Image (cartoon, rainbow, N blue to C red; front, side, top):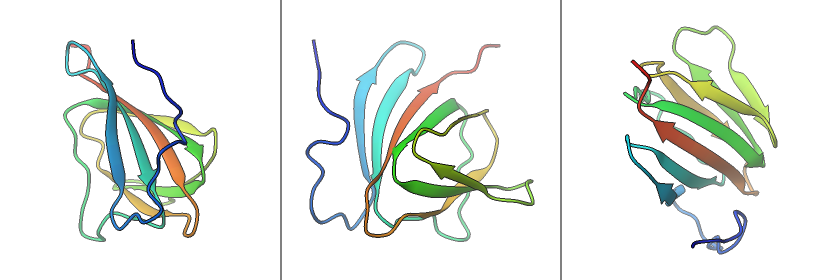
Length: 111
């Protein structure tokens, strides 16, 4: 049995996003904690995943950009979105000077 606190043990210096796998299961099921502190995706980079992703912003603030959407998606603590496979997206920005903590769940799409 594992347990913990989603906001615990975050390093004081965070030059890169912190990504930790909290749990894994069959069918590529994976649950991650991601901590961002002013981090963003490179401007020429898009996530293009073969998995479905449900991501919830637990704390902080962030902006996601989807390739085919005109407007970015502004997120605050408690907001979540399910991103289907192949939906190209990136993190435009996360709040500087504070931890934006994400809980991300990945799984293979139902066929």
